[in-house]
Length: 427
Image (cartoon, rainbow, N blue to C red; front, side):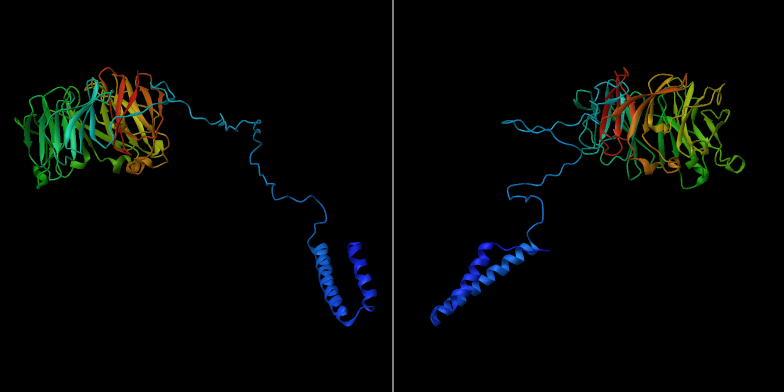
């Protein structure tokens, strides 16, 4: 590698050496100092040229900036005009429809806090508000009206009758009352009664009477004013295998798991309808466990969900004929993986259900683990067995306690994640 020094520096050094001998002693000292300084400068220059000066390329000035472009080039701004960022159209969220039509749909939040056990009451929704312990109605316009000035502190469970003018209220201390919003009267029920259900057609309630002695445990029925109580079916130690669910004609008061797993295995069970007057109805054979059911408005059909190997132990909806003469006939899988408690009948053959967007195998065995799984809304036709997507909520919601306004235009539900009352317009 060659090292080049400026010619002017070399000439100066030579001239200084030649004339040094001609100077006086004092002058020689000054000259030596100057020569030393010049030598230092020359050596420093040599080091710079050898180690630091680049061999090629242009230098970047202090005013220049390094620009890194990620994912393509942005258009340059015109003179005198600011640059404008235009969001990409690909992946843009759809605008939510106000009325459900199969796509992204607006969900309207009607309450700012969590509520308990909503139900439809005409065009509006009725609910219990834990914040002030009162019952209210609310409509699509957001107007809130108190059903009563009476308070019910710390209610833990609320069961409505079909006309939403009476409720059974359970409290943490095991006390129970029936409240009539029309007459504004209250009736106290025995504290050992639980799991209440209203008859859709008669002024009666059913409950489980759980005494300390299993021999004194019964399904009981009484008038909604607490009178005319009668025992209907002995429970013994089997209260957890009985689900009270009174049919529209009041012939059937619930269902019992016959515990046939020893003979049929976990994938097939027999469910026994319990007659109001001890009738012996044909049992229902279901493909799985965790049976839960919902009556059609006339009682002609039963919608239910079970979880078994047939569905990889996901919850699966089925429908079956359920009259006294056709019990168990025309059973069909609807191919929808959800729990029946997420469904509501709109008519004899039409059902709306919240359906989780994703459920892994075995989800039906531990449903509580999927309380925060977002739902889409589906419409099921029990006559044809077909289903269709009605709405994709524009916000993630987990639907429970579904109910419809009297004209079928509004769907009310609570979001299990927040506990707040929500609404979707169907018409």
